[in-house]
Image (cartoon, rainbow, N blue to C red; front, top):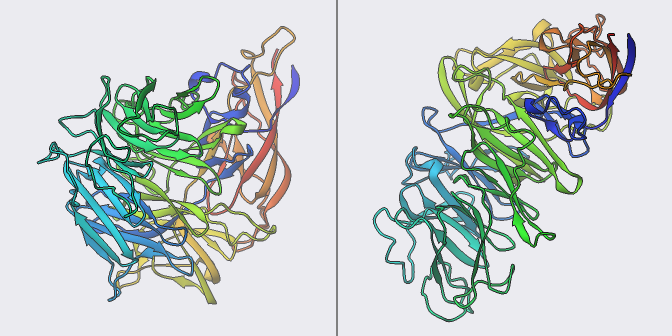
Amino acid sequence: MSVRLLSQFSFDRGEVSPKYAGNVDLENYQRSLALCENIIVLPQGMLTRRPGTRFIAEVKDSAKKVRIIPFEYSALDTYMMEFGEEYIRFYREDDNGNIGHVLDGSSDIYEVATTYSEASLPKIDFEQVADDMYFAGGGFQIKTLTRTDHADWTWNGTPTFTAKPAEWTGTNWPQRVTQHQQRLNFAATPAKPRKMWISRTPNSSGPRLLDFTTGTAEDNALVFDIIGKGEIQWLDSGRALYIGTTDETRTVSGSGGFYEPITPNSILNRDHANERSSSIKPVTLNNSLFFVSLSRKRLHEFSYAFEDDAFNAPDITKWAEHIAGSGAGNGIVEIAICRDPVPIVWACRDDGQLIGMTYDRENGVYAWHRHKIGGSYGGNAWGKVESVASVFMGGRDVLFMVVARTIGGETKRYIECLEDFHDPEDAYDIDTARYLDCALSYSEETALSTFGGLAHLMGESVELLADGAALPAVTVTNDGGGDGEIELPDGLTANELLAGLNAPFYGQTLPIEPGSAQGSGRAKKKRVTGASLDLLNTSVLQIGKNRETLRDATFMTTQTLVGDLVPMFTGIETLTINDVFDEDGTFGFGGDGPLPCNIRAFVQRITTGD
């Protein structure tokens, strides 16, 4: 029997597939976890507990699904739009940092009527150009939405085209749209799924985005077919015009090469990667475009490789091939990207789990993590995320989501946004932590014992962070007038309060290779007797063999009273585990409630058998 110390100083590969559990000699394996739930991997390799979600509003009709779409006119004028059946509602951040509905002059929720049905919403494609947004697909004619002011938007219906293509008639209208080189690009009518229409370039009179007059002049519109078997699934603009089809990924540029203007006399259509695309709208970051495979099980990074003088589209879910969900009925539904403060590609799955990939290409960071939003829905012990989108608000990229839950026996759909990462200035700056879901925060001049406004969580058990102290959970009750209220336990009062649904976090290590004088020690019996974790600004942590055996670290003791503030800890925390002997030698760590946890590294103490 011998004792060994095994270290892990980075987690920048995130959660990996169980199929890699035997590849202990790979470098990526040594930077990975078997499970990374409600934990985000930062580009620096550190693990941080996922921030909670802020409740914004209930959708207009919780019985029907909605889709959220961003609109970003400028850094100061950004909106998230709620598209429901035949309507749009708008959300914006006010001068006090509060996100809420855009209201009309009568203080009612401002709304614009559309023609989109609930069923058509997932099928529409969109492209914003200044104050206008163009919509295609869903079985409808091309539509436009024009912004004039915060509460002044116009749904224009079908715009007036110059030289409208004759094929665009009835239900045979383009299903894809983007902008490239100051031209509006449409593609893929039901009758011609490989055909493209590109508008004229601007002249001295201004843009000609709706002018499809063809000819041989350099500024004339273009009409052409993509040669190949695949149907066009999406369009995007970058080094060239990017096209994803059901058979391959292509580019269109001028005949002189990438960046060369596309004209009637100069056009080059190339195929690059034979990766099939779904119709899910892709997202971009720097020089990379991320698109979802036709199976909706994989995410690809489409980018230019100088060494190949071509575009490649590697599968960046290869190490985590399970992350999009198992079974024929589960896969990625929608994707969004946040660039600042942490670059993460986000996606929601059919089963409602939220997944994310922390991305730093220069340093080889492709770290997957999964998230179960607090609540329950459809037999699952998590709220179902049905739509995701991001927009720049308050100096950062904010991830918005539509979350379905069962509240009081009824389906409720809420607009929520992911809170900012907790970045405390000192060890007692806990009251700014936001780790509860569907939460509301309060700031009162006079300390209160009762807080209202929680009707959206009526009957639910909510966790509390009161003036920086974690309190026992309480149940939201009816105040008699339909407004949900809570009373702090033990007669306590607070000025600052956060109340929301619990969202436990959990990580599981991979099987270890302790080595042996005879060679590999993988099959030897082993036991994790303890671990030393390098923590940063941490107030909650549990550790054990698995979820069922987790026990608290020593941040709170038997002398810690209800309502006491527990300062954040930075340093090495050594914990005993007393695991049983088995072939894996793994351990788990996690926690719940409203407090922060950040893990920079850990060292395991392993006892091996003969």
